[in-house]
Image (cartoon, rainbow, N blue to C red):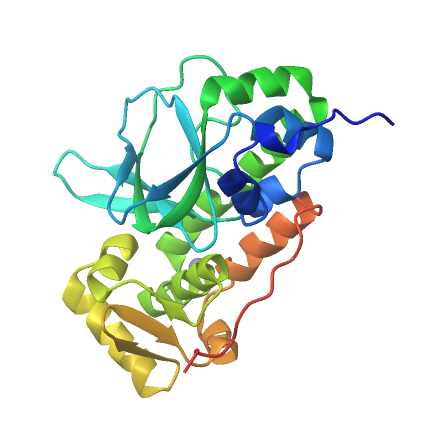
Length: 260
Ligand SMILES: [Zn+2]
């Protein structure tokens, strides 16, 4: 089978380096990669950076790389907000399924800073018109993202704050692939939609049981196996669906112990 030829000079070296650290892009067939890579741009996302607001036309799509993570946040009229989903190196933020004018429903905010690949959403639409396999991959990713959101609806209604907190820590560790999660308890409280004091008492209980410790704006996971036991079923349910629906995305190794 003939693959399109790519001259190395056509693609920025930073893009080539980052392509392998987003699991969705890393799983692309060479012909699909060739359709996208020339349009990708390496960028750095900053903590708290807003990628889009509700109502914005989503003209750019971001693929988080390495440990970069962003949230989709639903804004209420009172000014309060709650996280609906988190997206890291396994996925994409922006318009990868719909085409044409795509007003955003949520805010997207960067939670953990780092590198990402950015592309004009119109370039993705052109590539999808040319490739059925790319359309299929992105549609399946959208289904996996929807599953995460559906599970969170049930999780928020049925599961305890402690179990949800453990689920959130496990999911975030999967994204950052480190025992150290670079987030403060304030940020954790915001993402769980509770008061800071409430999350502090949950974190204190997890610390007393030797599951986590916290220092200098980091939460360190000390015992992943026991954290999995303390979490609700939602983390593994979402992960299993993701693996079933996107089998070409390689399993990732998780660093279980803190670095030191
Ligand atoms: Zn749950």
